[in-house]
Image 1 (cartoon, rainbow, N blue to C red):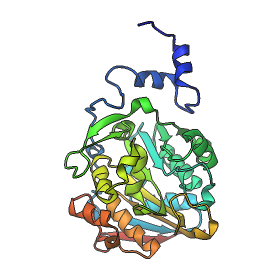
Image 2: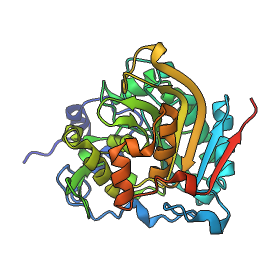
Image 3: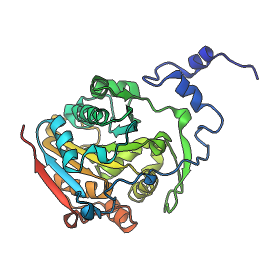
Image 4: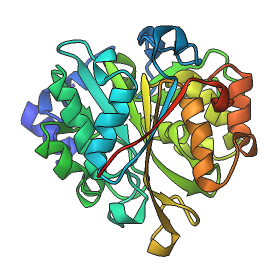
Length: 332
């Protein structure tokens, strides 16, 4: 087989890989380091253990299980809600590699339409992590509409991330790997992005919004952006969401509810469908966070079959009222 030069390889792969370096791309092509059908030995993110557990037993540590913050300033929401949760330093070790996974779904609308995570929330979280000793903070998602590069720019997230010292990274197709799902009911394996498993701190940062298939798009639904072949998820989505949650486990979930699409989600496009709620929900228990967020849409956790099933299968708690809940209001 004829060898090709590094320059020729990059030309064949195409330009437009954003902030991802060429060495990273070449590394992804090395034997044993990727390919969408490689079997991965990478451990689950459950190897990370914050002082508060994901099952609502943090009372003994003095930390809340769930923080709900109200306020108009996105940066203050981030800083104060995490302070009330015990501080980001609970989760950050010096020199940590951090990945923040917002919802950057489409390039059609700016953040005002509620389809993407508020860029100032993302930027503030990047800044907070770096202030507390993170070596690098990467922000990434796999949009379902348009290219990642276009979505990163049009959402306003790239501007805020870079302004605060973070790196926007495009998720490379060559790096995805196949992972078995122990305990999977409908899904026995998924093709997922390995960096979410190997990073020191994985923060799930969804925007809360209505969704035609899953009823609501919150923390668990935001994990769609970590996998390939998402069309497989649409049939039997309620059970498959739980299977996905068994595989991909963020260390921390922060639900951005500054602006929420109340109907006609998830892409939206009509400002009349958007409600300004100026809220943030923080928990290590993704199911508890999602369960509380149903209140924003005048629902209960029991209205969402995947939340009920997630609780039954031990993924988290839906009885948030029985958890150590701390609610705060932040002055503008």
